[in-house]
Length: 292
Image (cartoon, rainbow, N blue to C red; front, side, top):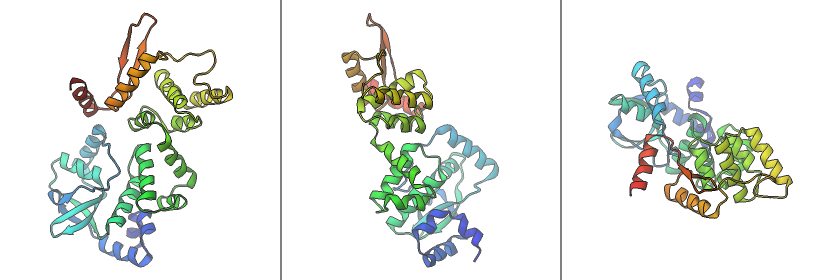
């Protein structure tokens, strides 16, 4: 059998199936078929939830010029009906340029096998944000009964990397949202995890965003706070929004809007409310909530 084609399916598939099963799947999938896009339904186990519009448009422009270089992977449901296993970005971009059919490998997989393949394919090949990757690892643990020590081997990452991703899910929702929308990097988040108390973590998170702190500066701030015995803010420094009324309003707005909210006010009570948004869809979502 052509081993080049087998390797092209990725390490995830080999980790999921026995040698005989993998060989059978590869034999079935070495031929890519042209499948009408209206016969492909979404994958209910898709871990990706955010599809950045600009990146999709760039992919669509590339497909318009060069076609789809890497076929999608689908699972046959019935005659003339398929379910996507991996390649949702390629499918969405293909629809954007008006393609009526796309090349795809056809696999046979049970529900759990399909979930595992979808999660592993996306962790390995897609540009998921760190929280989506962490959720994918968690789902592999909980829904596919894969132990943490086995996760790294399945997806080609070391155990420390897997552990670091899973730890992100212990952060407060506001910080997780910041990671999802790209306002906070994973390096910053890992530094913030060095603090035990939620209010400390939120203080550093908000300060990092407001002042554009680098990872090194966040690490130094966390060390300083730990050395001072767990104070919410370093000695000699005061949180700008420590007024209890403003803090309460800020937190209530953040929960209602599911977004980061910052209220800045001076001693006379004059100030501003800052609500960043990720893209046009996010802005429209916020406007609908505010107008509603």
